[in-house]
Image (cartoon, rainbow, N blue to C red; front, side, top):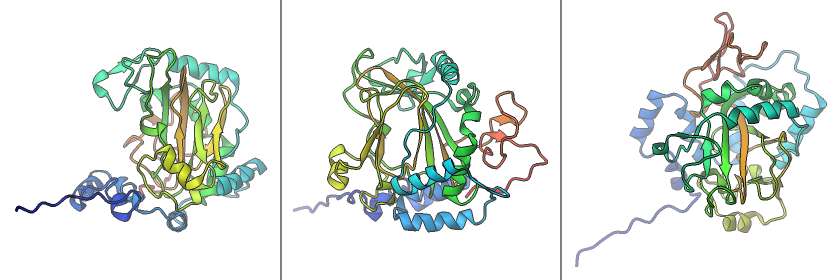
Length: 340
């Protein structure tokens, strides 16, 4: 009788499973790093799941990075940082001015978006997803950067102070994104959560957090952000793969799960190494703007800045280190290499 072998996949969260999250083979990894240095850290991050080890490695990077001279963060920034340290997510911060929210909503309503998981569908109007299979419509980074107020919002001084406290150095603004999430009622009906609508950990940076802006009203049915408080410091479910609600509840219970609801203009911070998801809306559609403040660069930003410091969309006085991924600085400005 001919023998046969059956490949048994590595258990979710095991070392080999985490290796295979992004690395197909050593040769493939080396080719990616040679083509784009940002993958050197990014592709091995699924292996580094212990929160204490992540902090130690992040500290080594932070020691080589610039800090703000005479740094005196506000009381609000100190409070937000303490909350991030303990809970992994803040409460709602002071909201964005309604006039700014109205400008952003009007801009993105008239700006085409696309489904990155179905590129053959091309670009479509945000109010007309071409198929019920599309749960989300993403705007391009060039569109987002040229939207009114975006760079000013992402360079809020108190948020940058919070990031410098949390990282131990100036942050790198990274992974700016804006997208629509489509629900059931009024949009053809959607029953299955996809992508980031399922619980997961973000393994983009050794240390950092995201800022989230609701540009539409978000209630319990509107696709709220769901986060397990304290999970950013936990060794449970150490994986970069999507997790079921049952897996998350089995590991963490329900008591520490928070659901972030609020009107348009609401904003909050979250360390998304913690277990989280953007829930599938049960009705309507949600518009969300987000960005990361990282210790190391990710491949999610453009390979070269898309804006010049003289571009009309760029506010005066932006920190060139913080904004290096998106804004080309003046040639006279020194900016340390932040590829790591």
